[in-house]
Length: 408
Image (tube, rainbow, N blue to C red; front, side):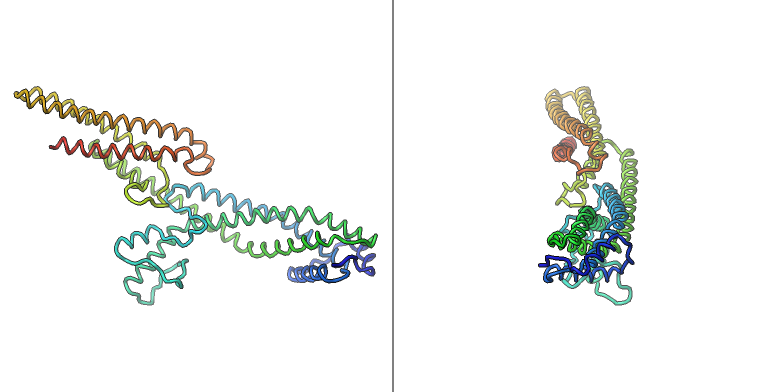
C-alpha cells in the first residue's frame, strides 16, 4: 500500500491545487481514476498532482450532478406517484416486482375459447406490433394477438413498475452523491496536508471515495438516456389510465340510466350482480379487479333496499287482497301465513343490508383521508368489503328464493 506522496510532485501539487485545470473527457477521467486505484493498491507512492486533480475534477462533477440529479429524481417521483394514484383501482393491474410475465385478461379470454396461450421460451414478452406479411396459423395468430393485447392491457402497470425501479435507483444515487460531495473537501485537505508534512495519506478513504464516484458515474451514464423516455412513458400511461376511468364513469352513468327505467326488483338484482362481478366474487378473484368500488357498492345496497321496501309493500297488499276476495278461511289462513313468512325474510334481509350500508358509510368516512393522500389502497375499507359483499350475496339469494316462492 502507498504510504507517501511522491516527493518531487508535492510542492507542485500544493502550488496548483487551487488553480483551475482543463476539464478532461469522461473516458479519460475514468481511466485516470482506475489507474489511481491501481496505484493506491500496489505502488509505494502515488502521483500527488494527479491525485489532487482527480479530487478536484470529481468534486466539480459532483456539484454539477447535484444540480440535475435531484430534479430528475423529483420528476420521476412525481410522475410515478401520479400514475400509481390513478392506477389504483382503475381496472389495470399493478404488477409486483416478479410479475412482468403474468398473463392478462385477454389471455384468460382466449383460454376460455379453447386457444392455448402458452408461449415458447424464445418468444419475446414485449410485442409492439403484429406481423402483417408472414401468414400464420389461426392458433399462432390468436397467441400473438393475446400477447399484444396483454401488452397493451399491462402497459400502465409495467410503466409504473419501471418508474418505481428507477425512482428507487435515483434515490440511492442522490444519497450517494450527498456523501461524495461531503467527502471531497476533507479528502482534499488531507492530501494537501500530506504534501506539506510528507506523512501518510488516507489510502482507505481515498480508495472508497474513488470507487464510489466511479460507480456513480457509470450508473448515471446508464440512467440518463432512459429518464426522459421513461417520463414520457409514465405520462402516456397516466393519460391511458385516465381515459379508462372516463370510460368506466360513462359506462356507469349509462348503466344507471338503464336501471332507472326498470322495475325495482330487476334493477336491484342487476346492480348487485354487476358489483359482485367487478369485485371478483362471481368466480376466481382477479388482480385487476381488486378495487373496492364504494360508490357502486352503495348504489347496489340502496337499490336492494328499495326493492325490499317495494316487495314488502306488495306482500302486504297481496295479503289484504286475499283476505278481501277469498271466501275460504283455510285458504286465506295458509296464504297469509305464507306471505307473512316471506315478509319476515324480506325484512331480515333488508336489516342485514342496512347494517352493511352503515358499515360501508363508516369505512368510507374513515378512509377518505387515506384515499385523498393516495396511500395504500383501501386500508380501512378492506375489512368491511368482505362483510358487505357477503351481505349482498345473501340478500340476492334470499330475493331469488322469495321471488320463486311468490311465483308458486
